[in-house]
Image (cartoon, rainbow, N blue to C red; front, side, top):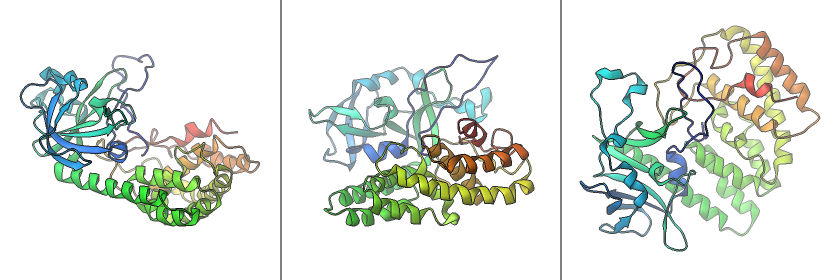
Length: 354
C-alpha cells in the first residue's frame, strides 16, 4: 500500500460525520522527499528549539540549532502519549509517552533557507519520528474525526535507519538517472528501481519511466509480464493517472487484467470466504503479501487505473471480473477474514466502472 497511510475509522456509538483525512506520517514519502534528515534533541523543555545530534543526509552538521515552532504542539506531555489502546492494549496497559531527546526530522530547506516538512501534508509534526526505548514512533491519524497521535511505527531504530538508507540510496540513483541526456539511458537507470522493496520508490520509478514515452512504456510492459512479481506491479498502476504515456499504458493494463480475470476464474471457486492472511496491526507496509494477496492488490490497482481511462476493450474485461465477483462473495477483505492493513476493495471499484 503506497499508497499513503490512511486512518483507521473507528465508529463508536453510531456513524460519525464525514471529515477530511488529516495528516499522518509516511516514512517512505518523507524519506524520499527530504533534502535533510537529522537526529536532533529538544532537551527537557519542548519549545521548538532543537540541537542536531547527527546528520543522516544533507549539509547540517552536529551542534546546529534548529528553530521549528510547529513542534511546540507537543509541549504538553498529554500530546505525546502513545495510542497503544487501538492495538488492543485497553486500559490495563501502562501509558507510554514519547520523549524529545532523540527525534528524527525529515526536512526540506526552501530557496529562502526556511525549513519545511518533507511529508506530503506539509505538516511538520507529521514529518518527525521519535525514538522511545529503541523503537520508532510517529504521529498518525487513527480516528476520523480526530487528530494525529503517536503510535509505534512497527520499526526499531536500527530498522528505521536501514529503511532510510535504502530509500535515500534509491533517491540518489533516481536523481542520477534524471541527469542523463538520452531517454534510453534514463530508462535503463530507472528500470532496476521497479524492483525496489519500498513501494514509493517503485511509484517514482514508474512515473519517471512514463514521462519518457515509448522507451519507458516498453520497460513497464515487460516488468508487468511476470505474474510471479505481482506485488511489485501495484506501484506501476497506482497513482499516476495523468502522466505522459498513459494511452500506451492502458493497453498494458488491459493485458494484465485479462490474465488476472483468467486467474480469478480458476481460483475463486476454490478460495472460499476465509482466504485472507490476518496481519498484526502496524503502520508499516514493509512485508511481502502472500502471492495470492499480491494478485488481489494488482487486480485492484489495474481496475482503479482503468476508472480514469476510456478504451473500447475495457467494458468486456470488466464484465468478466464483475461476473466472478458476483458469483463468489467473500473475495474482498471486508467480507472475508481480511488483514489489518488497508486494501482497495475490488467490489467498490467495479461499481465505478462501466
